[in-house]
Image (cartoon, rainbow over all chains, first blue to last red; front, top):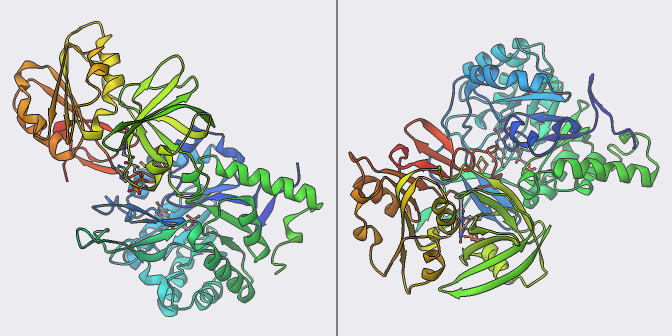
Length: 300
Length: 234
Ligand SMILES: Cc1cc2nc3c(=O)[nH]c(=O)nc-3n(C[C@H](O)[C@H](O)[C@H](O)COP(=O)(O)OP(=O)(O)OC[C@H]3O[C@@H](n4cnc5c(N)ncnc54)[C@H](O)[C@@H]3O)c2cc1C
Ligand SMILES: Cc1cc2nc3c(=O)[nH]c(=O)nc-3n(C[C@H](O)[C@H](O)[C@H](O)COP(=O)(O)O)c2cc1C
Ligand code: FES
């Protein structure tokens, strides 16, 4: 067994493999299928200050090598999460990342305040959800709105803060730089790409919201390029994601500069994909005689 | 990985495939099925049609790429199954009717088999609606007291709700909703099996939400079977 440990600032992960927000719930369901303590960490379903019912209509649509989703941040609210799921996660030996969304700045502040009283390892500030009409992504498109929210949230919490970036940003590198300037401990990228589909027989949009978020293998090359560009521009660590389905994809992102990686859509291809990716990285390190992932991080 | 024992075409784009192994499952539960690696990305939810000593069967209609892939599988080809998932139909007593429309008949075979073995069931009827021609009658007759088939018409027109304590139904929502309305205010309880697009199949991703009187439910985990009167139909 190689040493897969990575450090994201001061936070130690036993391996760099994290399950992405929205694809893994709060871990309970997958924990019935395998021992999720073998993972490096998990990022929770995006939480908002109040419970949300999510979007109406079709929520998932397949496309060549990808999926589009329009869940619309359905979640039990921070309080519901704390009551029902916080303890479950705290009892597990893995890094708990709580993903926070919102429609208004005040939503974010209230949510972050509340969650900061809990035993959470990292807050992942989602300013990149394309599926809620009034917000979420709005903060992650323009540099100045991103600056405003990161500045305020930085003052609101002393927990490690990672900002989740949108590939739909006008300039994702600029947004990453702003996050660094405003004191974020790291950035995670990418969230889903704004996309759409049309039913030609009904002559109607598939999604009630018209647009939805594209994820999966289809986005990997673009996500990789974005991670590479961002890693050259900032000194804070990066959590990378976008279409990772095997250990090779994971290593590509690490070579492009990521400290850890998130796996989202691939959980739907194979519910135990996390374990396979960890095993693949381990065997690769063994084979290539790599002692620490630091040796290959950002080498491109 | 499991192996295909048989994969037969029955007509009307409908196939039945059997997979070798010791599979678990209750009536109305489903498996997430795939016979390919990464593309298409998602596995396909299929209801358990039957389980016996040799293996598990699925009855499916070819509608797109995924089911087309299934239809091409040959004996000894490999297939991946995750499951059984979902809640399934409840164990009941008295007089029971199963109503299937189109591919909705798929889960009703195992259901008929299991219901017929429940101790306090007095009567079991199966009503099925097909668009073009009658099929599978003899199979279901093995377990049902009476199998009625309607071709090209509206199956719910043939149902006398008052004759039954429980109705289990699977098929187009419009058909299931009709049955629920017919049973309104009566003692007959109607259970419906809801179909929604799914990704994880286990309750983690929230893409399969079914709106009910108790709020949002996960079709894959809290369902696919719901008490008919609780569901808001689309
Ligand atoms: C709980 C459950 C049990 C089911 N049991 C059966 C069964 O026993 N036999 C059978 O023939 N069919 C069944 N279905 C429907 C079956 O899952 C779809 O027909 C199948 O997924 C279509 O895949 P495709 O690639 O051929 O079609 P495509 O239209 O190309 O599929 C595209 C995407 O849409 C999804 N999709 C399309 N139609 C449906 C649908 N009706 N329900 C859910 N997802 C859909 C697919 O899974 C895929 O992700 C069931 C559905 C559910 C939810
Ligand atoms: C069904 C679904 C729900 C998601 N929900 C969230 C969410 O609540 N918050 C968030 O930050 N990202 C969410 N995402 C985005 C993923 O976390 C991830 O950034 C994206 O899917 C790209 O990675 P992937 O290609 O590996 O899936 C969701 C993705 C999917 C597919
Ligand atoms: S398919 Fe993921 S929650 Fe139902």
